[in-house]
Image 1 (cartoon, rainbow, N blue to C red):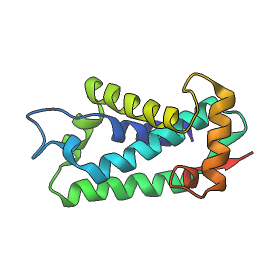
Image 2 (image 1 turned 180 degrees about the horizontal axis):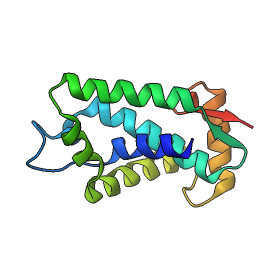
Image 3 (image 1 turned 180 degrees about the vertical axis):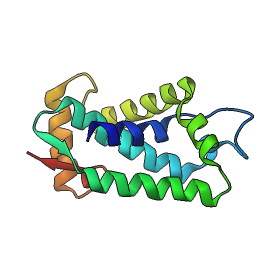
Image 4 (image 1 turned 30 degrees about the vertical axis):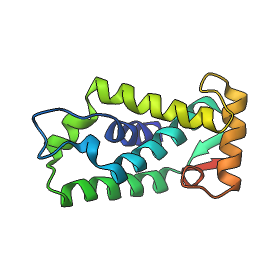
Length: 133
């Protein structure tokens, strides 16, 4: 499960200038989806009371990748995007801002567990990638 979330998270995080047909970072819907996965991954990694829904995350990652390919991006361009350190830093900042906006802290496991349970209970997109243990 960690591998799929790492892969999904990697897909969500990077962008290389000059390689992509256009800037993948400008693809708002794809990046919103990647942010969702990044949030779920952080909760899953930090909270022992919550685990990942492997197949849901994998399916969603494939959908996001398919969207990028349909828009003209190649797999090489997607890989370059997901491996860009600056874009990964930006995604982490957006993830942490979301967590904070929900009254949790990205460094406090208890608050992340509470957030994870709330996301599951509310049947949010983040919650769709998580399950209570």
